[in-house]
Amino acid sequence: MCDLLHEDLAEQDIKRVWQVMSETPQHTYQVLTKRPERMQQITPRLGRLPNVWLGTSVETSEFLGRIEHLRQVDCVVRFVSFEPLIGAVGSPNLKDIHWAIVGGESGPGARPMEPEWVDEILTSCRYHRTAFFFKQWGGKQKKRMGRELGGRTYDEFPQDQVSSAK
Image (cartoon, one colour):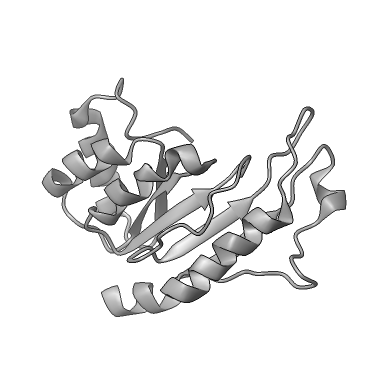
């Protein structure tokens, strides 16, 4: 578990990881980064792999620009991890984003996640036909807080995109 696109990781090392992922097509890899601009630069030289999903983290509206970089990346599934969601992001533009994961911060000192923030993302997902996965409310005791939103759980996955890419 690391940020594969961290600037301290040499491109040759990223290529080696990419090679392993290409040699193990029975697995689906989710590569999550806070550096989608580097992903946008490097992945064209690595090649598109059907078993690699690429995503970025967006914790607050300050980081919404990461989605624009991700949108430019050629891959089977593009996803945004809105976790820990520690501030409102409004109604993000999820055009060409296949999956959104939302979760609150957990553990001691966890900052609360407001229901309105989650509702805005869910509304954007519905508008852009983006699969929505609600992971957790978070908090000091995340299991007690649960993962229901509006009386139900959301466990959507980008199945249509994955099926059509194979």
